[in-house]
Image (tube, each protein chain N blue to C red):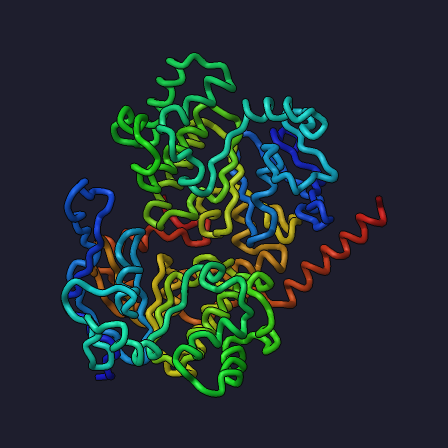
Length: 292
Length: 267
């Protein structure tokens, strides 16, 4: 789609020893859309988010491809300018709310510093904005929480703070990297509700990284299924859950336990399907080398 | 009525609350388990479910006596094990084993799989250890030559199988599984759950399965104990619990599970 605000085209990345991490990943994110990146451990779903934000680990290098943000290919820009462009437009909601907050600093400056130092806001404005946002994410007594240290708050509270912080500069896009994996189900539901509310109210596009198909079905409008660094299927949410096109997607869905279907054994992803996907990837690799 | 492997009566357990310890004097006690009563019948699979901090792991650790309760009693196979000393407990320890949540940190990275599985058997002075290691690997569906591998060479699901092999190698009657599939991908999760079910049937085990995931618990367990704030709020057979949950908190837990179905009204 041409009006997509983030377009990733044939993005490949590898470890310094040549191990492929991403293989020709393409995807579109339209303004205000929630797109799920789904896969098992090691599928590369978090790496796509990191590639866009320019925060890939040093050991991983992008070898080819394009990341278009508003008609500009980020990969052709010098790193400093890339970070500036993306920093003004995008934000991250990380997985683990404890490690994402600095344990030795109060909450307030951790929200406001980015606004002041990077976006050039006045400190008083940033302070007001932070208080408004904390109230918006239903934190009781925001004034007190601004002065608190992370360890004084529960996991759910910390995740609310990171959500507030992500929305602080009104970004066009937020990358949520497994934002509820560390939380228990009741808190997870509250946080997902909050993310959806905030996303709709602010009209932000969301790239939602998760391994949980249940969570995807509640939060996303479209999704990409990843396996071994490759997108095996990109589709909208209803066609996916009504009948995934790819054998691997179908197997993943069959392996997901449902409390409404107690009888009968779960079906682990069959080896034949794994072999088939890996076969496709191997074939693709040969193609890549042949074309290079 | 089937034989009761565990009988737990009015179980209380507390920890020292070091965050609120005065400069001088004893730390206040934080009550974690507040008077629990339940039984575990022989050969059953009991699920223990609850939110973070509900005391489900503490309860599990009290059952295998890694923690000593303050008061109340735990009877294992008719014997009171509540306050047994480590020496008195040792011969019985072999009969209840534990599988841990994170196989990476519960398997010694510097030992090979064979040594890891053999370790507890040596401590308990068993014979024919090598043959028993092979048996255990067979039971969990790992090739026998895996005994010479290191944990880092295995996938998450394979590591968790090694944890299971180590537990069943002692031929216990009871196994406590604490969140053992929450770190796994759905495909390996399905394999490990199917394996556990087979083992319980084939070896006549009794299993307590701690999890925060009611979908997993429903698949596996015949009975479910729901915990909140250190109390049991509901203890019911699985079908009844899902069809007619009595406790408000149970209803809340069930309603919080996102089904992989975009048409489910959820929020």
